[in-house]
Amino acid sequence: MSIGHTLLGLLESGPRHGYDLKRAFDEKFGHDKPLHYGQVYSTMSRLLKNGLVEVDGIEAGGGPERKRYAITEAGVTDVQRWLATPEKPEPYLQSTLYTKVVLALLTGRDAAELLDVQRAEHLRLMRILTDRKRKGDLADQLICDHALFHLEADLRWLELAAARLGKLAQEVRPA
Image (cartoon, rainbow, N blue to C red; front, side):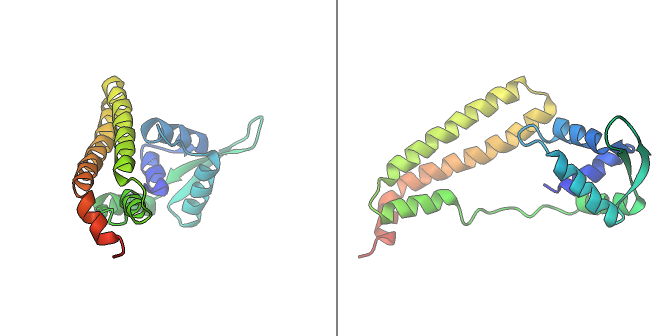
């Protein structure tokens, strides 16, 4: 995810302080990985330097001064370009799971057990996400569905790999 573009998009609704941006980001996108304050301020500094935001005001308070940021026309254009650009599909051709299966076979370990343990971990996470989806709002349901679909694809691969372990072992083990 592009943190900079996400913060710019949040600024399109109006000027905000860094704290407000962090809170809005965490509420909408950061359920599982909230932003650190330092990341917000370093990103805003970079966006300011690149002319995508401007300081809309500075408020003095009991602590440090609070800058209020506003998106510039260049920032709006940048967000529009980013939103219109499709994300590159990730084919996962260098999967850690695949690497572990091959290394287990190469080293004489039980690859079937490795697949069983991984399957159990996937199913555990799927139960957690399904519960979260059931209790969540529409945004949470959609993000959980995205994760669940990826986990389902992994499970299908785990089953396929288990069915082909004998043949794979013959191909990867030295003769």
